[in-house]
Amino acid sequence: MGPKPANKPKRTPIDNPFLGKIDSPYIPPPVDNPPVVPKYGLCKKPANPSKTPNDGAQMMIRSNYVKVRKVPENLHVYSLTFFRTNREGVRMEYNKRREIRDAFQAMVKADALQLEADGVERVTDFKTLWTTKPIHGRDKKDYTFLSQSFAYTQQNGKAITNMQAEVCYVGHLSDIENALRTNHLASLPEYIRALNANVAQCIENRQATTEKKVSRVGANKFYVSNGYKEMRGLLAGRGYFTSIRPGADTTLLNINPVTSAFLPPVTVSEFIKKIGTDEHARAYASQLLHGATVKIRYQRSNYVGSDVDYNSDAARLKIFTQIGPYYAHQQKFYELADKVEDEPRKTKPTDRGTTVLKYFTDRKFTSH
Image 1 (tube, rainbow, N blue to C red):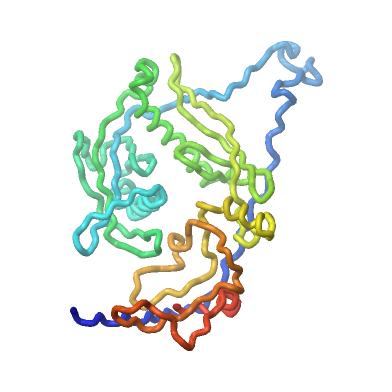
Image 2 (tube, rainbow, N blue to C red):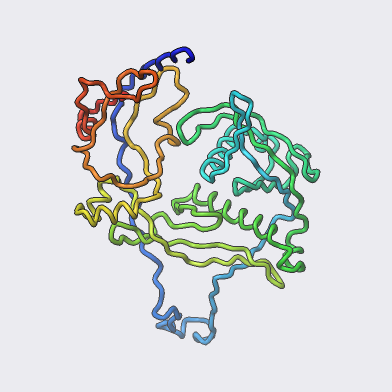
């Protein structure tokens, strides 16, 4: 039998005057007035046709295809793989969309590829990077190089400093406009994917400089932040789906309206109240919330010597699983006794437990 393992030392919380404080409540944007669509979707004859050209006889046809006036002449294509090396020297790759999105943004902020320093214009879907010129002149097929190390906060709130991107040159898209006009559609998926990424980036850039805020869902689907209608506990959101379409004479951008149901940006308790508090309503609310992302709003304790920030944006976001069978005044926390070798962990005999309700009401955020 080996030596008895030492008990794990208790963590020392860092003093925080805002411990237990709730972030300011989220205020949803006002609902905008949706575009007025004529009955049956047809344009009506002007009330005073004598003031229109050709006495109102001219007909205008509107389509959900618009002409793309300019496309990039050339694009260089790189694949991106984000990873870090742990203490044992094992490479740990990141593949989830939220992980690689946050990693790419951290990389750009640190300019770990020196794209800003070298004036390299780029767009990305976080797995592929398209640039208007080679990065550091590296444009040989399958050539791979690494970015500089940069800081990144994982989804559990742990800060790491040795995140890197492995960049591999995939190929070169040349004479794009002519290729879209002359090549067969079967040979154009990479061109179309690159241009769709350009369109999505333009929408992102525009919403950052205007009050027309949108939420991006997927590669090229966007929902207007204040374009929604309230339903029973949900929001029916108005959005648009964009897609590049090669044409015989010119490149076209197809824009289609889309509608989807979203959870409202409220607390879980407020959401349950709207749905109802009886047993069947709570089961329905649990079903609606399953798989949704929820945010912990109150300030939590951080600990001396720990590299985890529990109050970081990454650590605050959690995936909702289900509403438990017990209420807050029925569920209890218990303090554990010191571990004894070869015996199951037990609670302290003197600890009668603290209910979840009392835990949050008294704001006693200690470690149990």
